[in-house]
Amino acid sequence: MVINNNLAAMASSENLSASQSRLSRSLARISSGSKLPFDDAAGLSVGTKMDAQIHRINGARSNVSNATSFVQTQDGYLKKIGKALDRMSELSILAQDATKSDADRTLYDKEFSELKSYIATNVDKEFNGVSLFSSSPLTVTIDSEGGSFAMLGINVAQAPYAVVSNPAAKATMKLSELGIAGGNIIGIGASPVAISVNDTLQDVFDRIKTADPNITAILNETTGLVTLTNANGTPVALTQTGTDFLQKTKLAASGALTVAAGGYATSTANVGASGIGIGTVAAAQASLTAVKLALTQLGSDRATLGAYQARLGYSAEQLAISKENLTAASSHIQDVDIADESTEYARANIKVQSGTAMLAQANQLPQQVLRLLQ
Image 1 (spheres, rainbow, N blue to C red):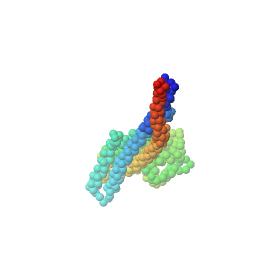
Image 2: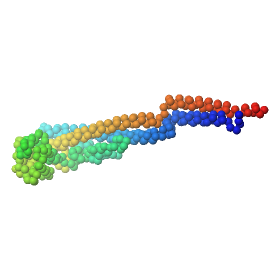
Image 3: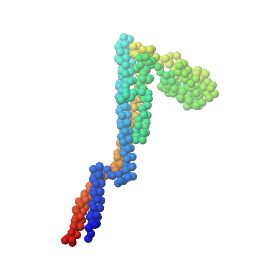
Image 4: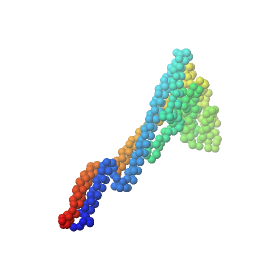
């Protein structure tokens, strides 16, 4: 029995200190819901990177959502432009009624002009300061690593939209876009080059090139002259058949293809400096051609926007799945199982209370020495 060192109290104190440390750690885990850094140092590193990736995914989801809203807004405007073009095409047909006078057509032209003006007002529309109808592509970031894809711009300030909206524009058609009614060209390749109904001249040239890759077709949009030459640069002598084809074109023996008189003119909608209108039958016919081209372009543009919406929708779904899986993985590494930790807390709490009581008892042991000294 000694009085200088109370070994029992020292042991009880050490045990109590360990129990208090476990209790403190358990309280920290339960109160934070997370494991402590020294519980799994490597896991903390992995979890930190996962958390950062989850935050980047949140940013990408916001980008995709905004891009989707942008595209939907574009499509909304184009839908209304389409309704205006539909009505303009209807007015163009009504103005060609032989039972109406030019005075009647002038009345139709008033509504036609207002619809032109409406289409023109959409040119400068913006989405959060970004032009809705610019020729510049819009690059959208769609994943946590900065991956992106470009949505091509839709510019309603350019042809064929501008032809029906710009008061100073002329409704013109490229020579290469001239429609051909049908026919055959003989003298190229092993068999005649067949021209389908509604082929354009460019389609014809493409067919010629397919039939004989050595032939070069040079189209002069200004003069309407097409020169066909072989690999040596020599003009190709050709013949052609097909009455409908003859109505639109003529083929010289030298291989020069030119537009027949009246053919290209009737397929062109030049109506003067005042832009398209339906004040006369001729103007209405020309305007109808321009409006139909704009409607064709609008259909293509809306299909493009629909494809972008589908792409963005898939990207949004993928980001949601990635976030869910990464969150689950991060939780497994960093989060505390509260049920298990509550059990540990109760055990540590009991041991602290028990240790405190035993330390008090151990501190009473040296007092027994006093009985020996009495």
